[in-house]
Image (cartoon, helix red, strand yellow):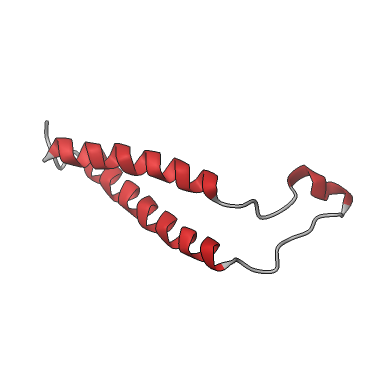
Length: 75
């Protein structure tokens, strides 16, 4: 069971990295210093779905990390 939790942690960590990189940028970054930043008016439908999946994977990663960190499952 412990190997399943650790495997779940590793897979959710990799998926979380990929999902975060898939998100579109929210602003201009350093280009906004001169006052020419164009922010998006609102999230698109695809972005909203991507947000939900990212939150689910992030919750899975945090929960599995807590289980491993607290030593609930022994190897």
